Image (cartoon, rainbow, N blue to C red; front, side):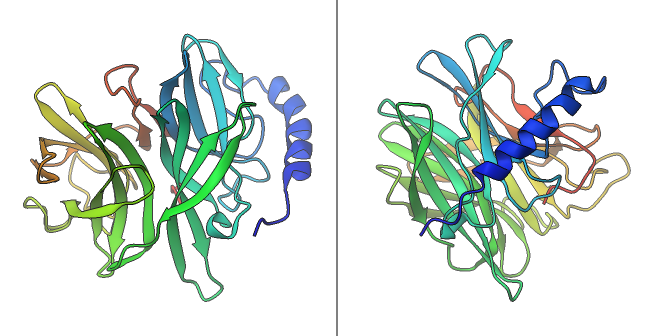
Length: 303
């Protein structure tokens, strides 16, 4: 069942915010930024039908995390961008508390979004659904709905599907927190984006020699680079060191080998991706080699 539309309130917020943004000498002229509300994670960085597409979490109604939509830009050359229709709004029961991060893929000529539908309960609990949406001819998106419920053994903090195709199967990595409050990266596979099979945990606490790896891992991305594979993710609660992991939510990478026959990833130690101020939730391009990842720059807690 669809929830009441917030489009009138969004339009009002944009119309009120646009004059202020244009008059603000500090408003970004090069980096992407909305004219009002909260801009959060970049998502679904993909090239499709001759254009680059970049989505991002956006709450146009306030600078908080209560109404996360997916906004949408596109470009022919990565320099000149245009606004596209809002791709996703949290207007269904399965995503009523936010359309969380995810990715975009070309599924046999259809631009398809894979995202997390976030649901919070009155008692403080929560759950998560991994969902699909497909592009319409007018540039809007039609929600297909959930294709993967919350896996057994994990809290409601399971999110941020990064999906890719390898040979004849789709693969998906998810950031997760197990019931012992330990961060993990989960791997799933599918023949069609709709029916998913768990392939187990491939990174996080207690895997490949990691002991203290934080209480939650989010925004994972696994991709080939040269003769190895790289896993990027954002662990929460990782122990600070003298010169590493000083940010509240760092972004890290680890190199290893991905065996698609056994659906296993053997990796080495954690490396900090960026030691600056809160570079997190990087969205790697679907082609993986170019352009470089887009990331979020801020000094505030992520969620």
